Length: 92
Image (cartoon, rainbow, N blue to C red; front, top):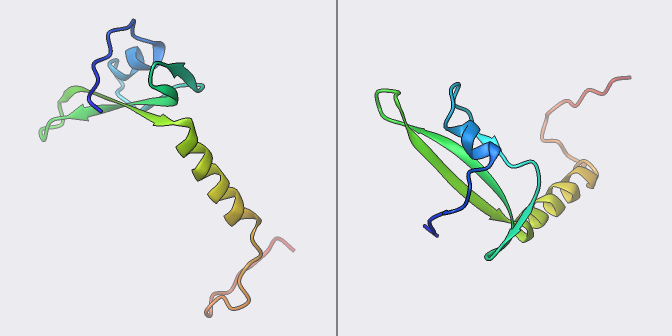
C-alpha cells in the first residue's frame, strides 16, 4: 500500500486528471510486479469542490473473482419461500 508509481501514465490515469472529472476503470486486468490486478482512478476534491488530485487503487484478480462468484451464487439462488409480505411481480 502506498507504493509510488513511476511508469508512464495510462489512458485511464490521464482521463482521471482531465475535466469532467470522473472515476476511471482500466479496461482489463494487468500484471505487474505485485500480481494480477484491476486499477481504478478516482478524482479527489476539496471541501469547496475544487479538484485536488487522483487516488489510484488496485484490486487483485483473486478478490474480483471471489466477488464475482458470490454475485453469481446470489443470482442463481431460488427466491426465498417467504418474502416477508413483499409482493413480487413478474412480466406475465
